[in-house]
Amino acid sequence: MLFDVAIGGVRWAPPKLFQELTVTSGVAKASRTIPVYTVVISAEQGVPQNVVFDEGCFFCEPGSAQCVGNVFDNATKTVPSAPSSPFRSCASPSECTAASGDACDLKLFITWTGTDANGAYFQSANLRFSRFRQFGVGQYYDDIASGVDAGVNEVVSKSAEVINGL
Image (cartoon, rainbow, N blue to C red; front, side):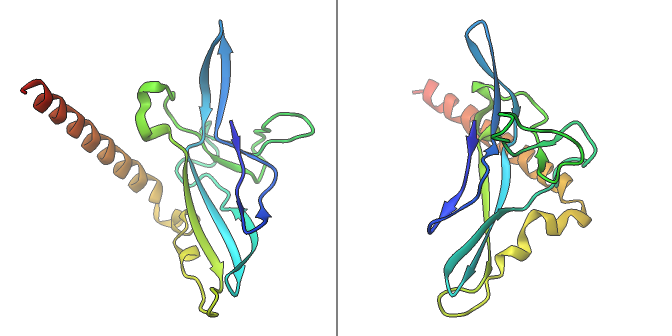
């Protein structure tokens, strides 16, 4: 599954990979999922000028098997995964299935650079993930994701107990 981003008539191309599916005996399964992307929108006086992605493997080691190609090549109809490609992101370390919940949902973090309609400079681009790589944000992200998953599981468990007790 591929996606692209457009705002105010400005579009990023080519498409990005969200999930690569394989079909075995008529059953589709996600063989690779890239669930997190950061989009950087550049604007002048509030008018979008450019859309780019904050490229890189910020939640995994850049040389690891998780750091994979993320852009679809229309000419070859593939997603090249050469280590030298500048278009790379971290694939989910676990297999995504129907039971994965929101851990495998596409998450787009949007940051802005440039100026708003009043000429004030946007500040969110300073908070994109690539700016925190030097501080090892990958482990913090993993810890937060684990905590959120544990919290969701606890809510589901308690809800089931309440419903069963009625």
